[in-house]
Image (cartoon, rainbow, N blue to C red):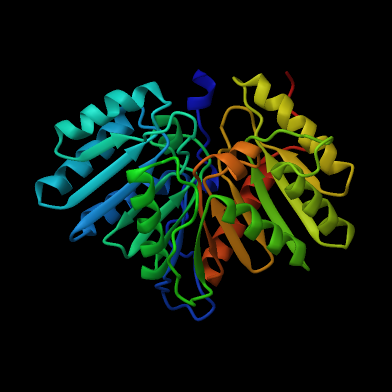
Length: 347
């Protein structure tokens, strides 16, 4: 476990702003990619700039220096009069004390009310206008050491949609249907929740004509059940490769979680025999990102490629087609790919 916290600096320690433009002029995109160490300063900026309210759903709030700062930033926002609510999953034992810590700082916080459904989303919505969502958990490992991918959206349509979803979860987390709310027609950003993640992902993989790059933290191969969500995704990736689409994936290999390694290896072997080019991340850093760049679009999500992630948990994501975000993700992924290896690290 100590090796997990070793981390690697690499060129992956940023991505919170666009890396350049052909004109040489600075860009101000409506969305930005938020990779790795960029999460905490982006979160702080989002909270500090909020004027009225902050709505948050988080899978876990673990004890640690990084999360102490998260709580203090939210407490300071509450002190200046912002309405804040934080929903945490009841399954994580640290979340129970996490709620108490937030309440002590004046932040309205509670656990979800359904023990049979995981609330696995990780997102922050400020003023119903801006959203930060993706793979980063509220833990020191996730914030300070892992490879993570998030996106910050400035879009009131998708933000309002996600606030309506949080409203549902806050009242009753057993409800699974998406909000009865239309998003804007802005094709550059679209919020996704629950079952919408799988259907949207399959639609775009099946339509891909050039290339797909993706990351895989955890999965479970079920070759005897082609209807399983992971098998639907894997079959779509294999089909894309068979029609000439360049499909590349980086899978996590952990030095502390052999069960996850074995599940990933089964999936990687299955994909490689069907033309998908796979690599393995270094074992001393967790690649926890859940992202698919498909031709000119990027799906960032909180869900793993599994039945839990794509059929049972409460999960969120976004589809983004802004050029700056796609280019920043490509630079992030290419660095990850270059640092990865073709065979699993030695046991």
